[in-house]
Image 1 (cartoon, rainbow, N blue to C red):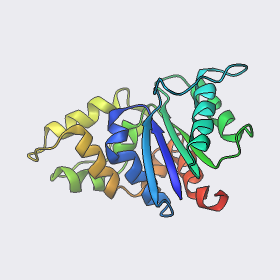
Image 2 (tube, one colour):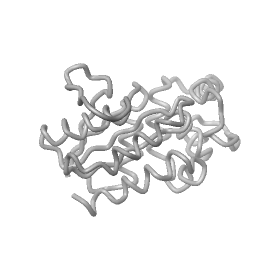
Image 3 (cartoon, rainbow, N blue to C red):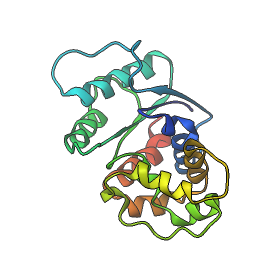
Image 4 (tube, rainbow, N blue to C red):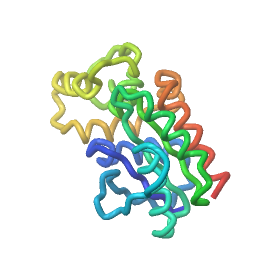
Amino acid sequence: MRVLLVSEGKHERSGALEALVRRMNGTFAEVHQDRLANGDIHVIHGKGRGYFKKALRWIGEARKRGYHALVLVVDEDGNPDRVGEIDEAQDNTLFPLPRALGVAVRMFDAWILADERALTDVLGYTVGRQKNPETIADPKAECANLLSRTKINITQAQMYAAVAEKANPDVVSNRCPKGFAPFAGRVRRLSDTA
């Protein structure tokens, strides 16, 4: 299955999101990535709010490029309306293409904080269980704080990719029930719809 993976930030595109997705669905033979804000993608006009339109635009683009499925993740960034917009795009039938659309609450970085065992393995010191990742005001800063304590010389993007390679998707789903859990279910079902 050829899958287009679309996300907002560089940390997601560093390999972290792809690693998480592959751990949840091993049927993806090819995964290509793109930025949500790619200016070459034409806007869909008409009804719908901003993130709904962006998601529809990417569903159409993935279909045009010949992909079998689209995986798209955006950050909630404190705007709960994004969840409804992305859910609406997930259920929209304008473009017949399997998709797994998700909203990371508050942001993708919270998913990296969810599995303390994976964090411990990657950072080389015992990382305690973080408070509810979806309620942390600035999970990116918390990840940077954890990284600053390690003796291992890696960037934050490399840390994210390494944690995602080791993270247990069921643990992340339990710790991030608003954002990751629905997204994980959609990713797991992709092979049934393609």
